[in-house]
Image (cartoon, rainbow, N blue to C red; front, side):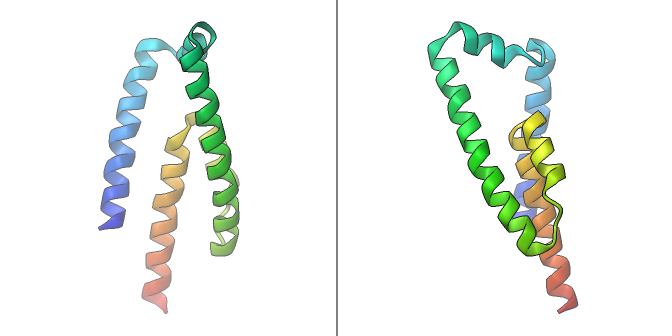
Length: 101
């Protein structure tokens, strides 16, 4: 059930992000953050959250034998989409391990 939820959230969020990105451009968030203090605060908050996710992801991936760098790179360029992709990969690896054990 967790895998289904992750895939649904991943697909929905990716479609939504792509739609917004296409209408406002790749640098739209930077432009808004430069104009509005509240948007700059959200941007900094997002960066801090992503940094925490990277720290957790690196440690978790090492424990599970999953390469972390593709997901860190994806998170750097795509935000939460990269972290969601890692969670899906993590779930699939966990299922594979449970089946072979």
